[in-house]
Each structure stands twice: as structure tokens, then as C-alpha cells.
Image 1: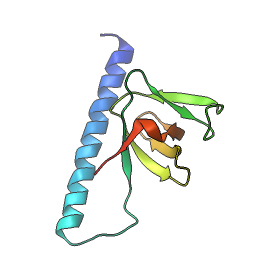
Image 2: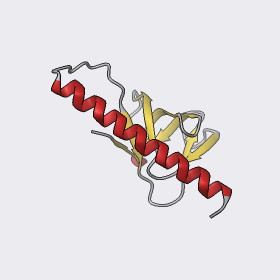
Image 3: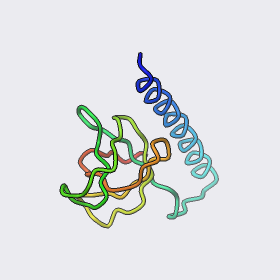
Length: 107
């Protein structure tokens, strides 16, 4: 296993732990009757193969800022465009637009 593989593995482990924390918070809020609409919304990268491109603008012509592996959890920043969601990955230090086809909303 190479250095890059170790980094990706550690990052995915971090994302899994973050998702557990998010789920715990949601359960706690649900149990307490808190149904605030301004809760953070998270999505999971669900590519078939390879990484999901993060782009500077919401377009296939937008410059690629980086890529996110399958399973990465991202924070939704803007969903005003049906085809492109603006997201942030703390684990990969990336913020930009991803195709909504490859993102699944976390419940």
C-alpha cells in the first residue's frame, strides 16, 4: 500500500467518523424535538469508478480543482442549481461544484 493509498484510507476513515457524529447529532436533535431547518446537509460521493471532479464553476467546462473518492462525505453549501451542487470536503480541503448525479443525500 503506497503513501497515497494510506492518505485516502485515513481520509475515508475520518469521513466515516464524521458521518457517525452527524448521525448522532441528528438522532439527538430528533429525540429532543428539534427540527430546525438550518441544520447542515451532507451528501456522499457515489461514483461508479474513479474520483468525482470538484469544479470551480457549475459546468463541465469549469476548471477541475481536485477529485473526491467514492464514499467521501461533503457538506452542501448551495443547491440552487439542480444539476450542480456546491459542496465542501473538509477532509480533502476542497470547495466547489460537483455533478448532482454522483451525490446522494445523507438521511
